Image (cartoon, rainbow, N blue to C red; front, side, top):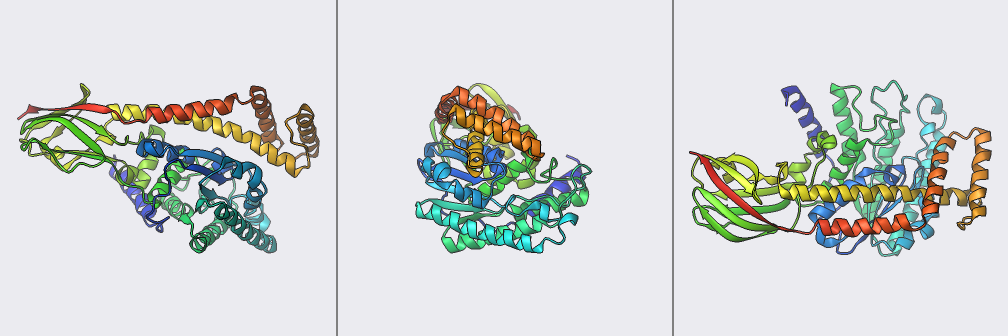
Length: 462
């Protein structure tokens, strides 16, 4: 990596590491949890939840956590309260994460066109605070563990010739985040700060590249890189453990060292070789290539993805490591003595297994995003006093309402045309999509089960 690029990434990492502490030492997720992700479009179709659930599948397969996508595009804290009884509570969640604010803030009230809108801004701020208080109260009354997320940033500083910035939006979102921090402390909830560290990382990046942004398309919705950054910050702030496992062998003594999250059997070792069977409780996280930049920005592998193999008391020289008979890498005795992070080796069977889990989880996640179209239109129909009973007449009423809005020049009609088309497809498929989500959930849990592997280490050069 070029030195200038390395310094750039290290600077962003330093900015991220200055984030405030998060949700406390107790584990957020517990056995059999049903996890409601309450939010707006950034949650509705946000890959941050895919990455967090993939982490849970690979790191905590025994917990069998069920994620419940409760995001709706365009929603607010007030909207989340309005749909609580028919959209959130029926999933019987035991834990909830809440990230709202991007729509509550009223982005059109900021920038040059909104300079005289201070009263409306103040009204929005008060409404957000009141509705968040109400929402947290309902979740806590239903005995859920709750963690509040500060809103992800609105990028008001990137050089972007396509979308003009509405300056002031992110300042308001930062205030919302501080309110969420205070609310969490007061109501005994957890808190994760996304806005603070991501804003600092953005500004640091823009000092070197004015066009750098986590939200390059519209300043609002994080890209895949931004979504991975969100997931990484979340996991680090809820104090997840850095180690996948630690496999240690004293080659000269022919005995295991202080291992963790694994079990070794059939060990045969000498100062020039080692062979053993090992089963690890967890899998390494398969960081995909498109978000490799985000991994470096947040130090994900260092902080959360340490699958350490340490073999001590070896003679000097180079050694070939094989796992299940396939080459995994060549290392010097000193490297092995210090410890090698297997999670970074592309050819291990553990990483191949984790990638299978990732592919299944991506399919499951994509289907849950499709299903949220039904909830989005349900909310739209309720707001417009349209019947919602699944009948052909109700669907016709929705179509007629959209046609009327088209005539009025409603700015969101193109998006709702897409939602309506998807809604009709889902309606024709009945419960089949939901059943497929359930099938994929069971499949990915089976794919993540620990497996035994055979390790072989041979000295290849003096």
